[in-house]
Image 1: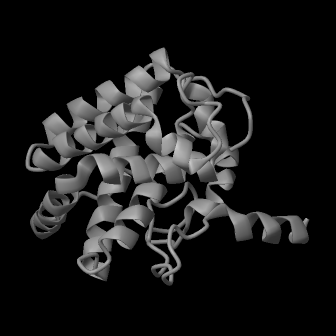
Image 2: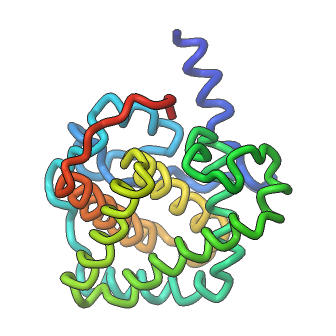
Length: 222
């Protein structure tokens, strides 16, 4: 078992470029773990055993300074929103191919190059980035943020029937890609602010799942 785990971890998060990978980020805490517990998306398989729709303690809100940090760095990211969004989705689908089960348009694509050429994938990447953009622009308005994420959560629970653990996985992928592609401005302080934002997103989305009475599915393992 130990050998299999080691092999899985070796291939789980391959670097997108030959440069050294960034330091591990501090991700949204898993249920039962302490705040600020380091994690990589490599360990997301464990989340399924913890119960996907459990919210745990309320996510820690961002301070005024952290909101400013997120908005400043996002302004730079959003200049290349489509390319960044595509990079995020390709990393997501390559490392966690079971996520493709929800996307009929490109669920049979295996090669990153083929995914990059997909018009449908690019459109979905833009939708993901636009949703994040709406949240970031309205960080001063908690009710607006909650409203936007509730719509996202309910749509994915009721219409698309996506297991909520994938949102936590995607959060980790977003943090990885941003830290790699914008490393010069992704200081530890910036990483902390973005990590807290991902925690807020996940908390609101899983709250929407609970609100609609989400029932855990026993589909393919992540």
